[in-house]
Amino acid sequence: MKYLVLLIGDGAEKPWPEQTEAEQTAAMAKFGAFDAACRARDGIELLAGEALSDSRDATVMRTSVDGRVALTDGPYTEVIEGMGGFYLLEAPDLDVVVDLLRVLPAYDIQIHPTIDVSG
Image 1 (tube, rainbow, N blue to C red):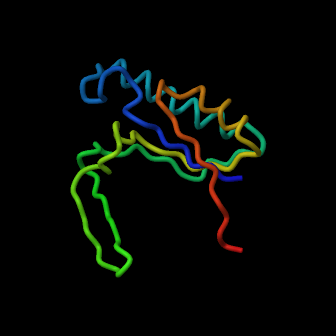
Image 2 (cartoon, rainbow, N blue to C red):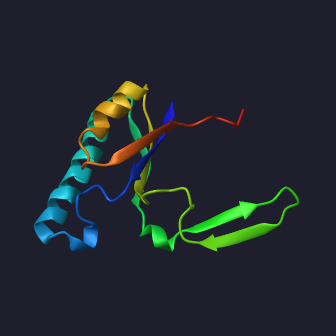
C-alpha cells in the first residue's frame, strides 16, 4: 500500500533559517537515517520526498462547479501550520510506516493511505 506522509511545520523548535549550522546538520542527518532505514527494510520503497518552501509561497486553487478557477496567494486558510515536506512511500502496513517515521526530527505528521483509482 502507498502512504503519503505530510510533515507539518518545520520539524524543530526554531524555524530552519534561525537554526545554527550544527542544528541544521543534525536535522539533515535524521533525514539521511530515514532514507537509509527505508532502503534497509524489506517491502519499503521510498517513491518521493521533498522539503517544501515557506507556506507563504503556496497558492491555493479553487475550482467552482461551473469550471471557474480562483487562485489565492498563501496557504489554505484553515491550515494552522505550513507543510515542511512530504514523503510518498510504499509499505506493507501503517505500523511499518510509523516505525520508520520515528527516525525523523520532531514533526507533527499526517499519514494518508492512497487510493488506487487506476483500475
